[in-house]
Image: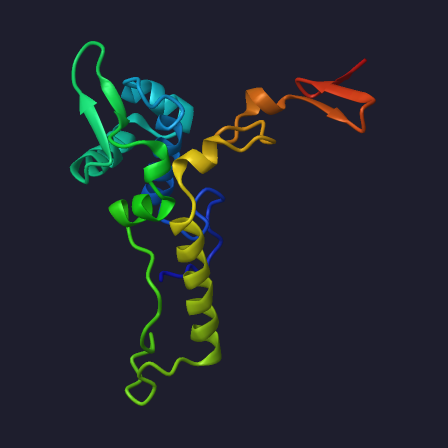
Length: 175
């Protein structure tokens, strides 16, 4: 497990940028399972630079998570149904999410007996692994109460109602 002590950009949290981008791309492809989605369209939907996304998509294709076709009318789509692809599979395709099995400080007298800090970190990793292994792409797109499917989208959330009386449209209160 990699830990950043500095202030991380908001999009990275505990995963690498590549992992975040792969999760975004796969989530968006789950919305159109039977269609080829062009890389440029996917890049716009996921807010990922096209060249970087192309490399992530190549990794996903090499792992048979997606299929692609080049040229006019080309693009990418999921290689299997969204309910057969877990978030953990995606994470493990482009990166790793590991438990802490021995002392990260390399202290030989610790072996598998972790100190309270590393045991807590290991427990957190275990919880994330368990959660991501139990969530499929289908779960993400089938959230009934979510305006944002499967990603945050400013266009979908710009028109909101607060306490049923005040409407905000494009940042301005309206009646």
